[in-house]
Amino acid sequence: MFKKTILIVDDTDWNRDLLVQLLEEDYNILQAVDGADGVQKTEENKPDLVLMDLGMPVMDGWEATRKIKANDALKNIPIIAVTSHAMVGDEIDARKAGCDDYMSKPIDDELLIQKIKKFIG
Image 1: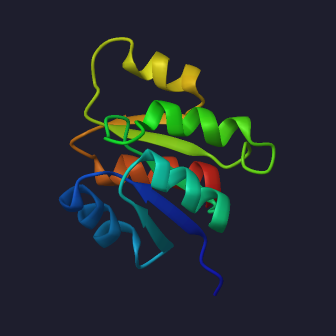
Image 2: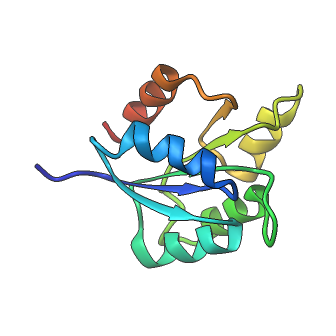
């Protein structure tokens, strides 16, 4: 069976590892360690969905999302912000940057899977 591909963009190994363990059975998983790496891997691999941390070094997730959504070849790839930025207004700001959905950490596994299925099945 053909598996859809998810790119996990997070600067924390532990966070990436948790997401990989949760998703690797049902999806092909790619990983990026910061926003710049995430943009590059999105351009190279055109994943079906991106899970984007917002607070990262080199290039944050806000800027990485804006760059991906500004690229006509990539703009239709759904991006879910998965972040510890959980203050009032952060979800609005994430959506303004181009995120298609939003989840605060710690991750609710079932809710994340529902959100992913909403976009890519």
